[in-house]
Image (tube, rainbow, N blue to C red; front, side):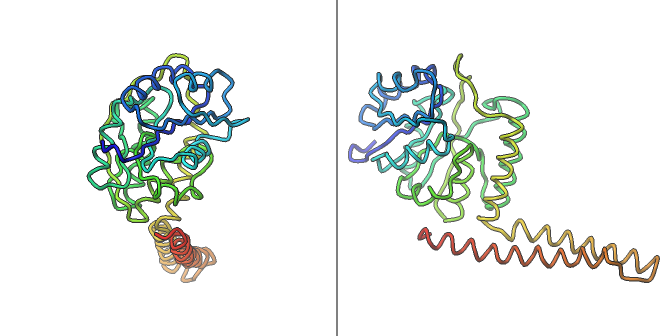
Length: 290
Protein backbone atom coordinates (compact mmCIF):
# COMPACT_ATOMS: atom_id res chain seq x y z
CA UNK A 1 0.00 0.00 0.00
CA UNK A 2 1.40 3.42 -0.90
CA UNK A 3 2.75 5.14 2.19
CA UNK A 4 1.37 8.55 1.16
CA UNK A 5 -2.21 7.29 1.22
CA UNK A 6 -4.01 7.97 4.50
CA UNK A 7 -6.37 5.23 5.61
CA UNK A 8 -8.97 5.29 8.37
CA UNK A 9 -10.59 2.16 9.79
CA UNK A 10 -14.02 2.86 11.28
CA UNK A 11 -15.81 0.34 13.50
CA UNK A 12 -19.30 0.98 14.83
CA UNK A 13 -19.57 -0.88 18.13
CA UNK A 14 -22.40 -1.44 20.58
CA UNK A 15 -21.48 -3.81 23.41
CA UNK A 16 -18.74 -5.37 21.29
CA UNK A 17 -15.93 -5.61 23.83
CA UNK A 18 -15.53 -9.32 23.07
CA UNK A 19 -15.18 -8.84 19.33
CA UNK A 20 -12.87 -5.83 19.66
CA UNK A 21 -10.38 -7.84 21.73
CA UNK A 22 -9.89 -10.04 18.66
CA UNK A 23 -10.33 -7.57 15.81
CA UNK A 24 -8.20 -4.64 17.03
CA UNK A 25 -4.91 -6.48 17.74
CA UNK A 26 -4.93 -7.97 14.24
CA UNK A 27 -5.88 -4.66 12.63
CA UNK A 28 -3.17 -2.75 14.47
CA UNK A 29 -0.54 -5.35 13.58
CA UNK A 30 -1.43 -5.54 9.87
CA UNK A 31 -2.10 -1.82 9.40
CA UNK A 32 0.21 -0.05 11.86
CA UNK A 33 -0.09 3.37 10.19
CA UNK A 34 -3.86 3.28 9.88
CA UNK A 35 -6.09 5.60 11.90
CA UNK A 36 -8.46 3.37 13.90
CA UNK A 37 -11.75 4.89 15.05
CA UNK A 38 -14.22 3.01 17.24
CA UNK A 39 -17.60 4.68 17.54
CA UNK A 40 -19.11 3.51 20.82
CA UNK A 41 -22.85 3.60 20.19
CA UNK A 42 -24.08 3.85 23.77
CA UNK A 43 -22.49 0.61 24.97
CA UNK A 44 -23.15 -0.63 28.49
CA UNK A 45 -20.07 -2.87 28.63
CA UNK A 46 -16.37 -1.94 28.47
CA UNK A 47 -16.32 -1.44 24.68
CA UNK A 48 -14.75 2.03 25.00
CA UNK A 49 -11.99 1.01 27.42
CA UNK A 50 -11.09 -2.05 25.35
CA UNK A 51 -10.82 0.08 22.21
CA UNK A 52 -8.61 2.64 23.96
CA UNK A 53 -6.34 -0.09 25.33
CA UNK A 54 -5.40 -0.96 21.75
CA UNK A 55 -4.73 2.65 20.81
CA UNK A 56 -7.97 3.29 18.92
CA UNK A 57 -9.57 6.69 18.89
CA UNK A 58 -12.92 6.34 20.63
CA UNK A 59 -15.97 8.47 19.91
CA UNK A 60 -18.66 7.75 22.46
CA UNK A 61 -22.37 8.46 22.24
CA UNK A 62 -24.30 8.95 25.51
CA UNK A 63 -27.07 6.73 24.13
CA UNK A 64 -27.58 4.41 21.18
CA UNK A 65 -28.33 6.32 17.98
CA UNK A 66 -28.09 3.38 15.61
CA UNK A 67 -25.52 1.71 13.41
CA UNK A 68 -25.94 4.20 10.57
CA UNK A 69 -25.52 7.16 12.92
CA UNK A 70 -22.30 5.64 14.27
CA UNK A 71 -20.97 5.16 10.74
CA UNK A 72 -21.75 8.78 9.86
CA UNK A 73 -20.06 9.99 13.03
CA UNK A 74 -16.95 7.95 12.25
CA UNK A 75 -16.86 9.11 8.62
CA UNK A 76 -17.01 12.76 9.67
CA UNK A 77 -14.22 12.31 12.22
CA UNK A 78 -11.89 10.27 9.99
CA UNK A 79 -8.91 12.01 8.43
CA UNK A 80 -8.06 9.32 5.87
CA UNK A 81 -8.52 9.56 2.13
CA UNK A 82 -9.70 5.96 2.20
CA UNK A 83 -12.33 4.79 4.67
CA UNK A 84 -12.64 1.15 5.68
CA UNK A 85 -15.80 0.05 7.45
CA UNK A 86 -16.14 -3.30 9.13
CA UNK A 87 -18.20 -4.91 11.88
CA UNK A 88 -16.71 -5.10 15.35
CA UNK A 89 -18.14 -8.53 16.16
CA UNK A 90 -15.25 -10.53 14.72
CA UNK A 91 -17.12 -11.93 11.72
CA UNK A 92 -14.80 -10.14 9.30
CA UNK A 93 -11.06 -10.52 9.46
CA UNK A 94 -8.82 -7.43 9.23
CA UNK A 95 -6.51 -9.60 7.10
CA UNK A 96 -9.01 -9.18 4.24
CA UNK A 97 -8.64 -5.39 4.28
CA UNK A 98 -5.57 -5.63 2.05
CA UNK A 99 -7.67 -7.49 -0.54
CA UNK A 100 -10.19 -4.64 -0.60
CA UNK A 101 -7.44 -2.02 -0.85
CA UNK A 102 -5.71 -3.80 -3.74
CA UNK A 103 -9.00 -3.82 -5.63
CA UNK A 104 -9.53 -0.14 -4.81
CA UNK A 105 -6.12 0.58 -6.36
CA UNK A 106 -7.47 -0.68 -9.68
CA UNK A 107 -9.54 2.50 -9.89
CA UNK A 108 -12.78 1.61 -8.13
CA UNK A 109 -14.52 4.08 -5.86
CA UNK A 110 -15.91 1.46 -3.50
CA UNK A 111 -15.00 -2.19 -2.90
CA UNK A 112 -17.37 -4.38 -0.90
CA UNK A 113 -16.55 -7.64 0.83
CA UNK A 114 -19.26 -10.03 -0.34
CA UNK A 115 -20.38 -12.88 1.89
CA UNK A 116 -21.28 -16.24 0.42
CA UNK A 117 -24.35 -18.24 1.41
CA UNK A 118 -22.30 -19.93 4.12
CA UNK A 119 -21.65 -16.52 5.68
CA UNK A 120 -25.32 -15.77 6.39
CA UNK A 121 -26.48 -15.88 9.99
CA UNK A 122 -29.47 -18.07 9.16
CA UNK A 123 -31.26 -19.62 6.20
CA UNK A 124 -34.06 -17.08 6.54
CA UNK A 125 -31.70 -14.13 6.48
CA UNK A 126 -29.83 -15.68 3.57
CA UNK A 127 -33.04 -15.91 1.54
CA UNK A 128 -33.98 -12.35 2.46
CA UNK A 129 -30.55 -11.04 1.43
CA UNK A 130 -30.75 -12.96 -1.86
CA UNK A 131 -34.09 -11.26 -2.55
CA UNK A 132 -32.68 -7.83 -1.70
CA UNK A 133 -29.69 -8.44 -3.98
CA UNK A 134 -31.95 -9.42 -6.89
CA UNK A 135 -34.24 -6.44 -6.40
CA UNK A 136 -31.37 -3.97 -6.09
CA UNK A 137 -29.63 -5.48 -9.13
CA UNK A 138 -32.79 -4.97 -11.17
CA UNK A 139 -33.15 -1.36 -9.96
CA UNK A 140 -29.55 -0.41 -10.71
CA UNK A 141 -28.92 -2.56 -13.78
CA UNK A 142 -25.71 -3.85 -12.15
CA UNK A 143 -25.03 -7.17 -10.44
CA UNK A 144 -25.08 -6.67 -6.68
CA UNK A 145 -23.61 -9.61 -4.79
CA UNK A 146 -24.13 -8.45 -1.21
CA UNK A 147 -26.29 -5.37 -0.66
CA UNK A 148 -26.11 -5.39 3.13
CA UNK A 149 -22.43 -6.15 3.76
CA UNK A 150 -20.89 -3.78 6.29
CA UNK A 151 -17.32 -4.60 5.20
CA UNK A 152 -16.15 -2.15 2.56
CA UNK A 153 -13.39 0.24 1.48
CA UNK A 154 -14.42 3.53 -0.09
CA UNK A 155 -12.97 6.85 -1.15
CA UNK A 156 -13.77 9.29 1.66
CA UNK A 157 -14.69 12.33 -0.44
CA UNK A 158 -17.26 10.36 -2.43
CA UNK A 159 -18.69 8.64 0.64
CA UNK A 160 -19.26 11.94 2.42
CA UNK A 161 -21.33 13.26 -0.49
CA UNK A 162 -24.15 10.97 0.64
CA UNK A 163 -24.03 11.27 4.43
CA UNK A 164 -27.32 13.17 4.40
CA UNK A 165 -29.00 10.19 2.70
CA UNK A 166 -27.84 7.53 5.15
CA UNK A 167 -30.34 6.28 7.75
CA UNK A 168 -29.44 6.37 11.43
CA UNK A 169 -30.56 2.78 11.90
CA UNK A 170 -29.50 -0.36 10.10
CA UNK A 171 -28.59 -0.84 6.46
CA UNK A 172 -26.52 2.18 5.66
CA UNK A 173 -24.80 -0.27 3.19
CA UNK A 174 -28.04 -0.50 1.20
CA UNK A 175 -28.30 3.26 0.88
CA UNK A 176 -24.67 3.98 0.06
CA UNK A 177 -24.50 1.18 -2.50
CA UNK A 178 -27.57 2.41 -4.38
CA UNK A 179 -26.37 6.02 -4.16
CA UNK A 180 -22.97 5.11 -5.63
CA UNK A 181 -24.53 3.28 -8.56
CA UNK A 182 -26.97 6.17 -9.14
CA UNK A 183 -24.08 8.63 -9.28
CA UNK A 184 -22.04 6.48 -11.68
CA UNK A 185 -19.31 5.83 -9.12
CA UNK A 186 -17.59 2.50 -9.72
CA UNK A 187 -18.40 -0.33 -7.31
CA UNK A 188 -17.08 -3.86 -7.24
CA UNK A 189 -17.32 -6.90 -4.98
CA UNK A 190 -14.71 -9.34 -3.72
CA UNK A 191 -15.63 -12.57 -1.91
CA UNK A 192 -14.54 -12.67 1.73
CA UNK A 193 -14.89 -15.43 4.32
CA UNK A 194 -17.11 -14.79 7.33
CA UNK A 195 -16.42 -16.28 10.75
CA UNK A 196 -18.98 -17.10 13.39
CA UNK A 197 -19.97 -14.25 15.68
CA UNK A 198 -17.76 -14.08 18.78
CA UNK A 199 -19.14 -15.75 21.88
CA UNK A 200 -20.67 -13.04 24.02
CA UNK A 201 -21.16 -10.76 21.01
CA UNK A 202 -24.87 -10.16 20.54
CA UNK A 203 -26.59 -9.49 17.22
CA UNK A 204 -28.59 -6.26 17.26
CA UNK A 205 -30.64 -7.21 14.21
CA UNK A 206 -34.20 -8.43 14.76
CA UNK A 207 -35.22 -10.57 11.75
CA UNK A 208 -38.86 -9.44 11.45
CA UNK A 209 -38.55 -5.79 12.45
CA UNK A 210 -35.31 -5.10 10.63
CA UNK A 211 -36.30 -7.30 7.68
CA UNK A 212 -39.26 -5.00 7.09
CA UNK A 213 -36.99 -1.99 7.55
CA UNK A 214 -34.53 -3.35 4.98
CA UNK A 215 -37.37 -3.82 2.51
CA UNK A 216 -38.70 -0.32 3.11
CA UNK A 217 -35.20 1.11 2.70
CA UNK A 218 -34.83 -0.65 -0.64
CA UNK A 219 -38.09 0.81 -1.90
CA UNK A 220 -37.18 4.24 -0.56
CA UNK A 221 -33.83 4.09 -2.30
CA UNK A 222 -35.51 2.69 -5.41
CA UNK A 223 -37.67 5.81 -5.61
CA UNK A 224 -34.56 7.89 -5.10
CA UNK A 225 -32.45 5.88 -7.56
CA UNK A 226 -34.77 5.29 -10.50
CA UNK A 227 -38.42 5.97 -9.57
CA UNK A 228 -39.94 5.00 -12.91
CA UNK A 229 -38.50 1.50 -12.58
CA UNK A 230 -40.72 1.13 -9.53
CA UNK A 231 -43.76 3.20 -10.50
CA UNK A 232 -44.04 2.24 -14.18
CA UNK A 233 -44.68 -1.49 -13.57
CA UNK A 234 -47.23 -0.63 -10.87
CA UNK A 235 -48.92 1.82 -13.23
CA UNK A 236 -48.93 -0.79 -15.98
CA UNK A 237 -50.45 -3.33 -13.60
CA UNK A 238 -53.30 -0.99 -12.67
CA UNK A 239 -53.84 -0.16 -16.34
CA UNK A 240 -54.05 -3.80 -17.39
CA UNK A 241 -56.41 -4.60 -14.53
CA UNK A 242 -58.61 -1.66 -15.51
CA UNK A 243 -58.72 -2.66 -19.16
CA UNK A 244 -59.27 -6.31 -18.29
CA UNK A 245 -62.11 -5.50 -15.91
CA UNK A 246 -63.65 -3.14 -18.49
CA UNK A 247 -63.47 -5.91 -21.09
CA UNK A 248 -65.23 -8.27 -18.68
CA UNK A 249 -68.02 -5.84 -17.72
CA UNK A 250 -68.54 -4.73 -21.32
CA UNK A 251 -68.86 -8.34 -22.43
CA UNK A 252 -71.20 -9.40 -19.63
CA UNK A 253 -73.11 -6.18 -18.83
CA UNK A 254 -72.32 -3.82 -21.74
CA UNK A 255 -71.24 -1.07 -19.37
CA UNK A 256 -68.21 0.82 -18.12
CA UNK A 257 -68.09 0.49 -14.33
CA UNK A 258 -66.74 2.71 -11.57
CA UNK A 259 -64.15 0.06 -10.73
CA UNK A 260 -62.71 0.22 -14.23
CA UNK A 261 -62.57 4.00 -13.98
CA UNK A 262 -60.85 3.75 -10.58
CA UNK A 263 -58.22 1.30 -11.82
CA UNK A 264 -57.44 3.31 -14.96
CA UNK A 265 -57.27 6.54 -12.94
CA UNK A 266 -54.90 4.87 -10.50
CA UNK A 267 -52.65 3.84 -13.41
CA UNK A 268 -52.42 7.46 -14.61
CA UNK A 269 -51.86 8.86 -11.10
CA UNK A 270 -49.13 6.34 -10.23
CA UNK A 271 -47.34 7.05 -13.51
CA UNK A 272 -47.46 10.81 -12.90
CA UNK A 273 -46.10 10.30 -9.37
CA UNK A 274 -43.23 8.37 -10.94
CA UNK A 275 -42.49 11.24 -13.31
CA UNK A 276 -42.49 13.75 -10.47
CA UNK A 277 -40.24 11.49 -8.39
CA UNK A 278 -37.85 11.24 -11.33
CA UNK A 279 -37.52 15.02 -11.38
CA UNK A 280 -36.98 15.15 -7.62
CA UNK A 281 -34.28 12.50 -7.96
CA UNK A 282 -32.46 14.61 -10.54
CA UNK A 283 -32.60 17.65 -8.25
CA UNK A 284 -31.31 15.70 -5.24
CA UNK A 285 -28.31 14.36 -7.11
CA UNK A 286 -27.56 17.64 -8.83
CA UNK A 287 -27.09 19.17 -5.37
CA UNK A 288 -24.46 16.57 -4.50
CA UNK A 289 -22.55 17.47 -7.62
CA UNK A 290 -23.13 14.01 -9.09
